[in-house]
Image 1 (cartoon, rainbow, N blue to C red):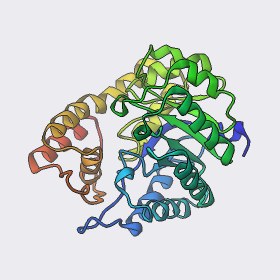
Image 2 (image 1 turned 120 degrees about the vertical axis):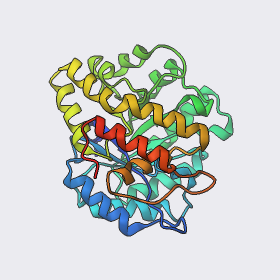
Image 3 (image 1 turned 60 degrees about the vertical axis):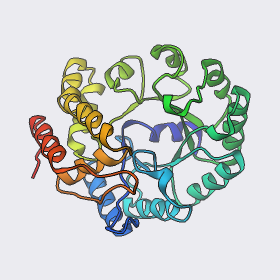
Image 4 (image 1 turned 90 degrees about the vertical axis):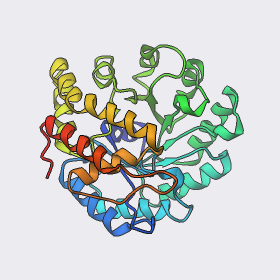
Length: 307
């Protein structure tokens, strides 16, 4: 694919999908196939959304080196070419990231979400070399991802220099340094994907997509948000986003004080909507009965069809 084809796939609400585990915390590939078919049938298809596999919210960093490729292959096959599939790659050095990227490409991924090699303590020049070498090695799009918890900022001048990299086609954006508006000077070169709960602001500034906890839980919610954003009906889009995100943010906060793990509430939401996919791997816990009751009440208040 050329650059514009790669960019055309990285749009809309991005579904950071969970990894299903059985009672022994082993990956349930059969359930992942079933969920993928449901996500596609529910409208998370090319040009409207992205299915992102093995990312942090999907517990990708907790997967073994022989698990994430099988998970990706399962999703690609179950999507039957109808969805844009992005695979998360995390924290490895250049050599291993390129190996993983080529494997993901061969398995059918349309793009990669790639974090810097944070444990190498990279400088800005190191980061630039890392993404440049990766860009030269593959033919699919790269979404650059850094966030505050990584303690690895990427500065605007580094992003500007990345515009020369053919396969770097997107930036997952919640600024670690600088102002929110800064990255939009590059909106004609990169797809800007909001990662800070600012979907409306992002689209107003010319952005291309957003990350939200709800996309894969109840797809009609975020597909309606997308329609409103594309119609520039900003207030209605924000109101719809807030109807779920407001109470959910508080639940994420409360649960996070009791147990860590990015997938805990995500999996709680899946269970609340009648599509349980197991608990997170230890030491992360699961939502307790009181938390689940509060979660279901929050989703019902947003008008969701909780069973």
